[in-house]
Length: 266
Image (cartoon, rainbow, N blue to C red; front, side):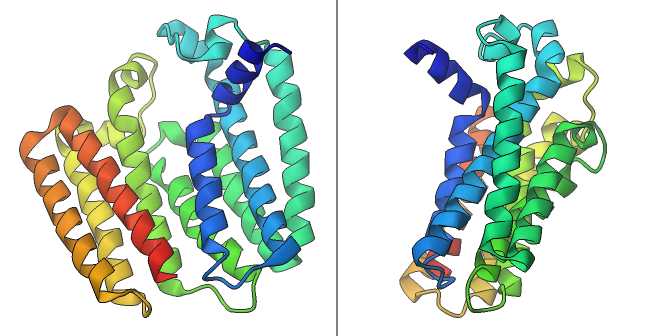
């Protein structure tokens, strides 16, 4: 395969979000006390699981993406063959099952539930009022998976903050695609909220995640709490005052602050 073909294949797996979630899992292994070979298994399982979700998303959406002329989707443009992506997706899914169960049964089952929620979103829930649920399960399940791989029970505040962060990520992620989704009949929760309420809802959920982390995390340093509060307040104000693309950028900023606080809090 050429370098261009490899880039297209990785792009079809939604490489940015895939690497972001994998990196977050790697960072969480430190406060969770997961080390050595088990940490490697955790990170590998998350990587293959996210690859399978990304590839399945583009496979399910290929006709819709072609209908709206998505030039950033290699499957829609014909740059990639569906057969190749199906094979890669299947291989990633098999690897995910093996790697997840190799971590241990409780942790493995938690991770497979997380991956199943991503597939459920791709296979139909994205077009319903429950489109937020797979994100809540997946992001709330990530800290649970990592902690179950270690010696301690998952912190409830971490699971709750992760779930809220997931819902906020869902609302934020859909903001730029409202027009294309409406043209092809996708009516998830963000579309039902509409372009005016959606940024407000995204910011509210992400701010709620910040509050859960601030109140629930016992190890959050005061400097991190103060800096996080100032950043979240400033970004929330920007999102509510400016609107449009600025709301999208501000919501992404709040999500990044929340992730940083989650990692620092441990």
